[in-house]
Length: 428
Image (cartoon, rainbow, N blue to C red; front, side):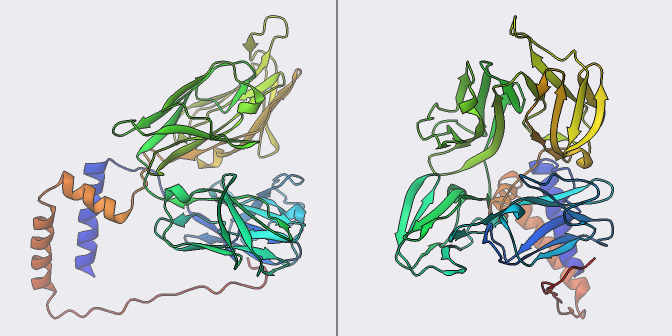
């Protein structure tokens, strides 16, 4: 046990020194859903649980739907518990769910669709890991549809299965995307499947904003660790994946239109994907100037409620503005600007503003821990360590031999595991 700890400490030290300090802390809680699906038919049952490191006291479920906005009182459900079972789901239960502590810490978010029609696609709601096997099922009236089914990814037909099921034996980043299915009984909604894996490119946006007025300019760039050859920008808008959006690794939208609103990312020929950036081009007079890219804890952030002068077409933020977070008023500023001197995870959320000229759309602001965030698999991690530190193996062998001599006669206790059983009722 002590030897394992020593080697773990060594690997951690080398990771920090050779790859850079990852920084940040793991979320104190994670939201799980059982069964792990992104779509449900009406009147089905599913459970949500906040898995907290330590006591779950103070953590509660929150949600954002088309009809119910998050509130501290949680009028719709009460939201006074960290576990909940929806026994008879309705379409109004569709939305984004997450866990939140009394101090404002957030877990991961899970997006769920409750469909009122007969066909759904059974796909994972939580991220899947590269090389995992994933089976997508086209379900009809709560049972697997023994019907010939067409499966679509990002709007394109990818397979037809007579069993109503499609299996991806080993998922990769290229399998990440928007999936749906249809058969003779109807078509399912579309759901996004996230694949956790290594990305060697990042997408940047300039200016770093999540909202733009029409006819403004936006610049997008794929920042690749090696050559940008083979990387291209892709996007998903309200009309679907724009396969014609093939502009290399850099592109400038000189006169943005509302149809340019959507999710943008970089993708390589081999299917590797970068981070995704979501921005909105608004046809109204008011926008919220907030960062599109994640901000780092401790940074100072200024949100500006901008409006366009109808005569000059210039923008300014010189009107008294109300700022909202997750549907609740948080501040009124006569300057039209709101500054958060040192952002924290509690500041992560959905923001909007309004003034006498109108109301802005809503945009999500993501807050990350200090330092770069790495996403790396164990094989790639070991390869990186071996490249950076050629003497690593020799060091480990010597340490193992040294610890083995001292550990002779010690007995290793069997490793105990515990698996929580999903509850059938609300638990605090």
